[in-house]
Image (cartoon, rainbow, N blue to C red; front, side, top):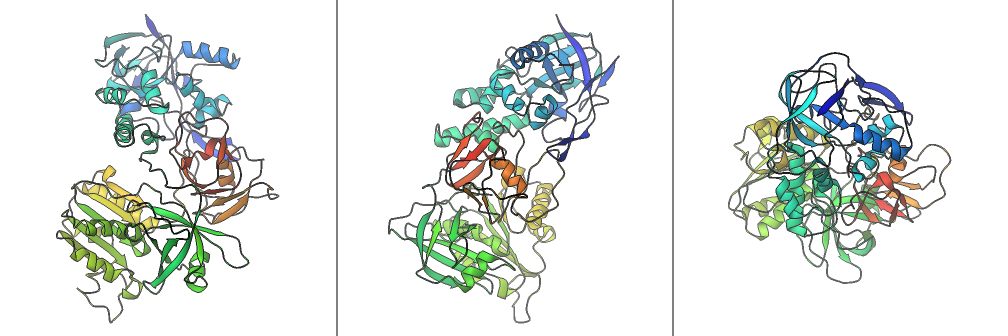
Length: 586
């Protein structure tokens, strides 16, 4: 008979880690006497990161004494106490290799259902004093598991654990964990996992993404189940020489460049919505690297990008003031997963200012096909002088039989004509969107300033649009994901503090920072953090792929090796060091 040895709870608190404060509830302490277990939590317990822990499908975390003994032997340690792994229930049985997702148990007055393996993160490494611990739990097949509460009630140490129902589809916690995190992801196993009704929604979405990736690309590298997006391998590595064949003024501040390959070879197709990284070489100045969406139609002769001159923007000023037709620039292959979904669903494009560029490429593709899909073009600008591509968009929409538009000017000039140049004097905001009868079952594509996308994405979701159908693209650096750590002060990316490094040059393309590598950093993630380059991470040990980033040029070496390989053209900053000069999509 299996027994509940200890009930452990703990509330979030701040702990110091690498010079920062981390808010975490990884420290759990045993409770004496009965404890009430509720649908969302245990009385007296809490979670600092609700994105990864807690809630209906992760109400109670379980770890087992056989894993305690295993880690004591593996790590040569004998200082473990109940709650050591952040678990709520410490059991003397139910190993991960035997318990199945969907198994049900009665403990005390409560009834539970196994819902998913643990989603491990860096805070376990803090608790254990061993940064690689999150990766070890996955690679050694001992993650522990979460319980959903089917019947609330009191439990206490010493209660028997009685199995009351067995899952029909017998897939163990260890097997499900391997299926997501380890290489392979066989289709038949993914389909089998998706037949388990008890599997939590997050893991279900991950397996659906992996299944779609498998059907589309076979055994291509990358893990769409972890990144949330299917990655498309870039057509070439590094940067390639292009000549500027044409320059067009689209508005007072926007210039389009037509770029033709210097070697005269045909270009591969790109997917509408993708971007390239351009390298400009100003006179007597370091190489400038910036990311720009492709704004024209896909063809084998040239790429078009459209660049806005921003206040204090070095690259935009160079294009406007110095770059000339016939000069050479460097360009990466097209990349990115912000691409037009195939199918017959309605499409709603929402953009502000220069954010129109990736959506314009999508509109070109639809116009070429004379698509019969329901299409809405919604755009916001200040006035006609600052409204690029106005005539071009009008011409494209005329080729689409089911297209409608709404153009909002926030500060129209006296000469701007309502109904011709623009449709409404306002910002393109949620109120403007709500005034239209948009198809809520369609795919929504948003691009523009971060506040524009945040506000509209949240508002559109509240209107009833599924989150999976709201697609956003960010110009410049993406938003940081740093679980448990307060948001940074918003400093602009900069050189790291202290003496400069003497190693290979690392270029952060979106942030516009070039830094010499310094071996005092354990990995490229730490270097980015030292430069205040916005980063995303969770495990910091090559497991979760939250940090997966485009590697535009160069190569890295891993230490430790990631559990599963990133997609072609990508890398994991959290466990890698440079192997020569790099250009990174951060």
